Length: 359
Image 1 (cartoon, helix red, strand yellow):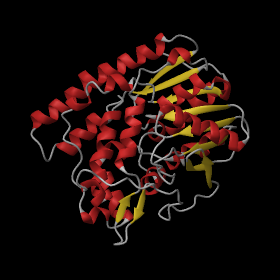
Image 2: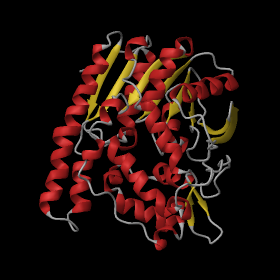
Image 3: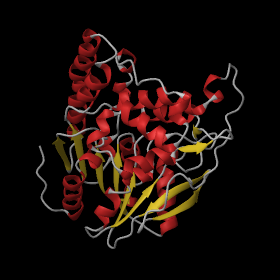
Image 4: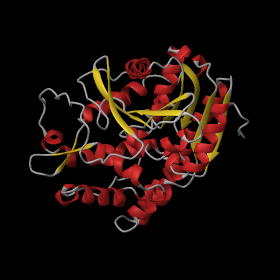
């Protein structure tokens, strides 16, 4: 089951500890500084993966080239994630006969975080500018989580630039989500301490405690993705690179209207994660610290409220008509990390136009 809301809440809860004084600044706050694009020294080079930057209107963005030959596939990550989240999936897909690249959107990972430019039209235009820089006229797009909104907007406004679309637990109605976000009873992750941000190893250990749902998918790609969003402060401790206001702007932009699926002519595959994911995670994380009744209410909320939203989102995706395929998988939200082999095969077949078992 998709639990994007909890992933967003986790990012917001963790950020103040990493952002230091910035998160606690009294109102009115000073202007938020522009965060420059820069390669993270915390992320080591990966053999066979090329790190690069591209200048698009208003921002310098980081991207990764996973190589391969054939039709171009652009991978877009979810909120709070970067191109590094695909550093295992991307090479695997490239080996299936595609040229695969991944773009880190503005205000994420090693990309620049400008003061403005977080609407969906701008985010979609960034991808178009990226394609132009590669000399690619038409590409397949694969997006996880929040990137689904970018896929839909880009395909609706720039249909000539899109081949096929793949939504990795990403085809959701964010506007409908906003109606119940503030009712989520989950108390959030454990507090981060100074010791948790003293080193990359300590920070990753904290994330493993805070995100037991990722245990089934944990690996080098997850660790690289986490570290790409951090910088070392003058005192040697880790800080989050991106001001929280940037994420808020993107959340607002994606929740401004229902998805415009009817305007999308590209064949589209939507993979929905319907496994226990956060249920098991929350039970494990909350059990030692809160009473059973609260834990039960959290799990009931996921089942009854978030589950109904997922069902409605699937129906909405299908109702738009056209060449749309829905596949449900028993997996966590990061379905491409947990079930990489199956998802790579499914994406390969869909992009090749081969038969895919749709629900």
